[in-house]
Length: 179
Length: 88
Image (cartoon, chains in turn brown, blue):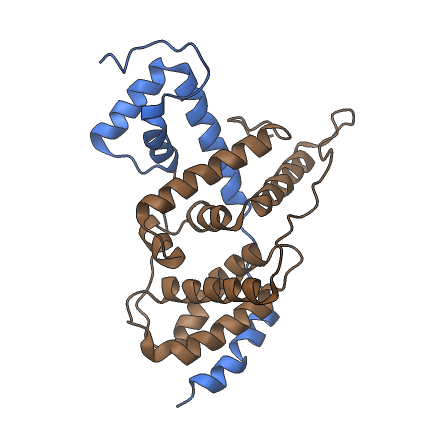
């Protein structure tokens, strides 16, 4: 397994921090809002909050701080609108075993299915899985972003993986070889 | 040693190994812990299958990372309202 590549840089100014961290902010927002959401809007609002609170930032880790602001902004929106986070509609019978499907198509379907099942996870588990397993943010940083102790993060992550494995076991055989 | 060489009558990984197997799948285990985990999975079928399936799943999960925003979205966000707010 490759070593983790995450390396937070020291923040020099808000603008340089925004330029550097925008891709991960956008990707995390995409996961939080789901397929029907508007990640651009969420990132825009989070950046506004970052600008308002920049003088309170301790200068330690801009990425963790900005991701935390983004997450809080999302949670506030969920509470404000009393949104019910509906899981995306299940992709029924995504893999048809009676038709010849190319390996590439199988792989794409499998990834879509995994994506969908990640989206179906409850928010607290999805956040942990996305940060640690998709974005490869170190545990300590992820715990800071999610505002939970390390042990809780670890437990949520294991639970999220367990739930995902169970969900996928019914649709996609997860074996050691890629299709 | 008793824990290293044992037989299962079910298909679940050993409870005491689960955390270590997650660490091994992530590539986090080092030194003795790593050796212990590797020795254990060589002898324990359910733990070996659990580890293999976890490693395969994590590999797939990484591949689902969403694409970075397109350049026009980046530009739009970089020129957003926050910039006004951040000006002294």
